[in-house]
Length: 606
Image 1: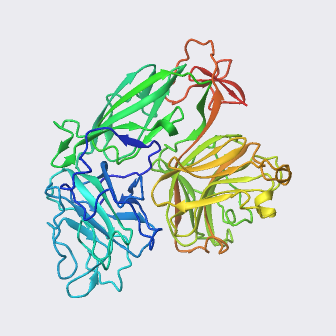
Image 2 (image 1 turned 60 degrees about the vertical axis):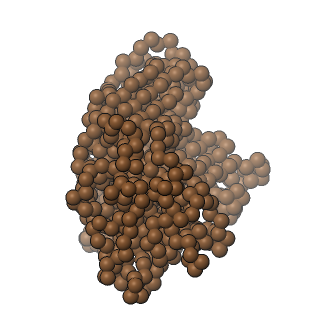
């Protein structure tokens, strides 16, 4: 499969549209066979929802899954001319079909012809892929011509864009329906998209061979916008279709109040041409901004970018400060920083029974930490079936209370059992009395993420629902997502891509507390690992498969009191995103307990 650009989905800061866009109420443009404001009302299939649309590794979430139609033409997928691309949808059942359309001629409608006699599609057909359809001869096929036994397949096959298609923006439609190529949705009495709780999403598609784009940045107030290495953002050249991380840092006494970006074809005379947006202007939601990194997905980098940042006086008495991070931006196939990480040790538990630290189980590649589990090729030297990789910050870094963000993806396969989690820094009570906080786990080939706490109260005494101590939800795990935990003295909260998925609270019952309901009062360290199941939860492993999970970054923040330092200036080192000193003026790798000077401000780490 040809893919010119790496497409990323993770958007740690959500976005809202503010530029001129196509009028959603204009049913003459990209019409549907039902009112576009129709809400899901079927009681027969009440659990069905269309939650996301994806192209290769890029995904756009549907903000309100209760709507049958969603206009996401403020969002874009970036692909190369003539590329073969793989569409998919997030939907709660497989007993529906996906249909994909592209308005090649910018007519404002999707011109659809019947598939050819073998089920394949002519190049000029604006239906470009479908997962299932009954042809006129009664055969059931998909758009590759494959004959099907039934119409239960959800994901449409990959398709190749016409090589002669002019570069530029197009409107692309994803439709979840049953046995209907009508782009507006099936509405007959037998099988209705409304009754079946299907869905339609329109999004933009940018076809471009341009590898790079220009960035400009205008800063109002006292602060800076830079790349992670400290280079000024203004005037930089970036890669189209690739994620972009920037550092937005306020000077002493200031905070980042707003960040706005215009992106796309900024040379266009108007934001709308040929019935499709040429550029979008958006405000970045800063609710998940903690004074340092802002991560923008490759889908946002669809052309030139113009940033406007406003820094305002900080009237709060506290602020988030990053106390630990690793971006894994090292040379390919090197080992993680030994000042931050140590190899985990092999013991008899499911997750660590195969641990073997080596260049094949743990390494850095493409700016991410890769942990693997694979067949042991020499059982004479080490009599175990597999070897697996795991690292941890034990004895290097541990903390009490704060927020952890870990961006990761994993390959789905039977026996898969990766995790990002936290354990208490020794010396401590034995497990599970001292507690365990699981930020992320997944098992086998299921697109489902799990978030859990363990303790004497939940594990030994069986109080897993008093209160609920484990949460899970559908997530497309082969794509990058940010899994977070916010932990303070009274609660632990889990988030995925900034959205809260569950909360575990400290009890007010003294009997529960004395029985170990809340052991989360001391330092915990971080573990990243790729393991395999043993049949008890995750299935036993496939010895011929190489299991792999990639961790893009780990970032830990704490909210610290803000006080005046009395220091007029601290010289910044552009090699580091954050300048940290002790009161003797010595540079620190990260804040220590007590008083620290972080970017010229005093922080107290307790």
